[in-house]
Image (cartoon, rainbow, N blue to C red):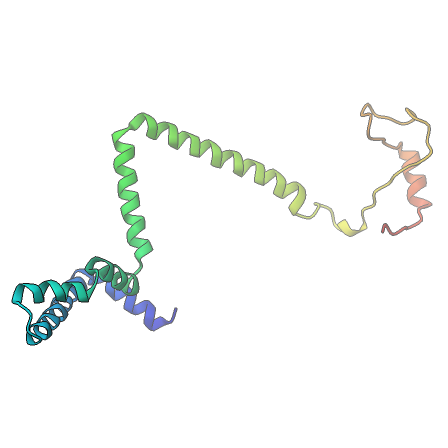
Length: 174
């Protein structure tokens, strides 16, 4: 959207009543001109007015199309929707309280879950050089040799850790 287009739409929002009155006047003029043409062709005045309206088309649809081109219909629709929502929530305060509480709980839960996932998975680890971290796996060790209580994870004593860190072969995982 160009700057000129944005300025034009903002101008319409400020003077939309004037613009709508001008549109009404112009549409009436077009209907009148069509009716005059039909009168010249020999139609009765009443039939000419009806025929002109029929030839002109759906006036409400044309007004809506003009409104779409002039301004931000979505903004007007949003305003109407918010007014309607306010009226409905004001008419049923119990429902309003439950709806607001449900939204607050849902937003709070999602925020908490995202905060945890962001800190664990999306951000880098809080160490100086995370690219130098290693994952150590052991194979061929007897079961229950160095467990810390968790059946799936093993830990190493300081002595074993120091020995491994001194004698490590770098391997690239495929």
